[in-house]
Length: 252
Image 1 (cartoon, rainbow, N blue to C red):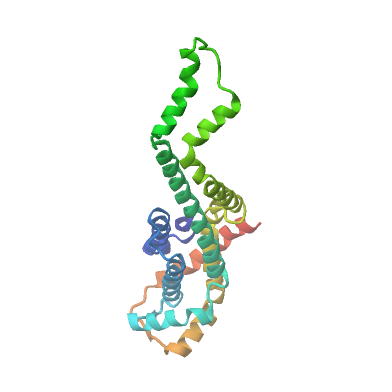
Image 2: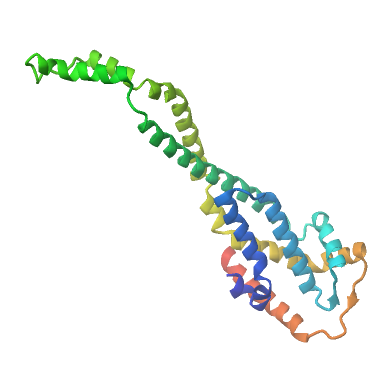
């Protein structure tokens, strides 16, 4: 979508978007990512890139762009999209990853419990319950229910100790599942992420002149480029038109 909408401007800066999605994947697989910081870095970088495109007639060095970045919070060039998207992504990814990890731990617990060998007392009780009738010439005689239950309780004593905690775990997983099926549904957040980012870009395009003037007031007027390609401005206008047409399809 971004390539179709923004063309060469996206291709030249595609790494900004790629880095964001790689950070999201890295969080899900390893968890060693601050999601709020990742989103802040993405929008800050996007903000600086868009600022230079909207003001292509000027030349900006790293120091000036650093000043541009410092004004992002007060200017809110993308509107409230960054905040809303960050909140939605964080709660969905955290809940989904927690649920996935919990399933892994539960599987490990079940496997380990299945490997616990029976105690000597359990073996003797089972042997007595199942073998004594046969020894007495009554192979078809079954143990009474209460006797069988008492023997199994003794054999599963370790499992019984886990019962309360396991039930609490299952209850918690059910609550997380309800959230994941509702407001924390990761598919409902990730699927329209390109539309949300495009909405943020459109907000910046609409407020570009005002944002630029306020940045110039705070950071100083930048120097004009001596040899500016006319194509830059043409591409920007063309891509803005393309975006407007595309966005109309989303909101229609």
